Length: 361
Image (cartoon, rainbow, N blue to C red; front, side):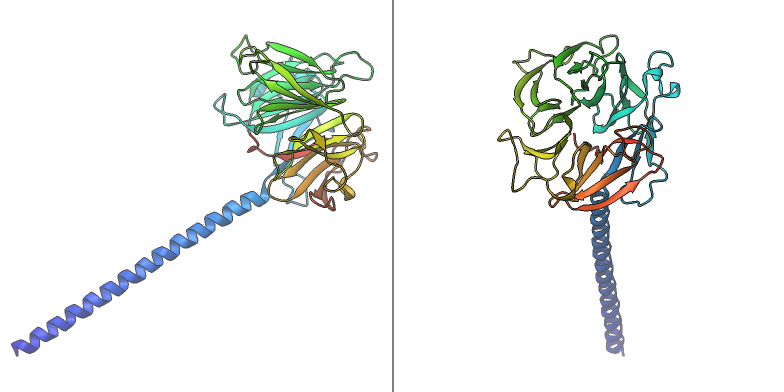
């Protein structure tokens, strides 16, 4: 009897141990499955973020407002983000806000010089601004005379900035790029140096080659704060490395080319072009911009990261605001130049509509 009881007890212990092991194995499998699902979800989220990058930052001259829209949405009835200087954001009601008018250029950049992580550069008629993103709080601003015709602005990695002033048809101002010590604490934020460039329309920092590109009646490449320039952070300087003739007159915009850091996208009155940095030459023939994307008077150009998509705004004769804006932003296949779709705001007067990419710098 004792032997039978011992066998029964042994059998029960083995059964309990087996069931416990089976339960543990099931739990381990469940944990593995949960971990796998978590990774899949993370990958899906990352893929969605990549696919949806980026909003389109626009300069709406109809309401003097910087606006960002989601290109995935077919309706742009309400912007995802907007900005214009106000006293609540720290801008001066007498010396700064009255200078804000036709908005021309907008960029968002990763820059933690002021501890905010991201900033915008915003240029409108006679006022150039650096502000925190997304809140819009004032970091730096400076005004210009009425005939300066400032069209473009870029922030440098150290917090200094450069503006491009095209001049106006009726004035003698502009025709230069100007670098500012905007990184410095007051009152040393406005140390600056001017470099002549006829009809200067845009500037772009190149983080791969550590240089500045500027476009006007030609394309120019500058070194920043090198031994050749003799500059410092508190007294920044540029030195011209090279100058390149355009394929057609009067440059408008410069942008990085997604997927190839050796290329720049360039627009002029006469067309849309690809410039190869390593050779210092524009691509002609095979590989050049073709199809519907090749058109005249394109005010802005950019690409959507990871989507093989080019973004453009151009001089639209149907725009009700003025003779150079557009009511829509247009999207094209970057490789073939084929038209993809437009996003329209019938009341808008977009001068520029560009990829609003904070990961560029």
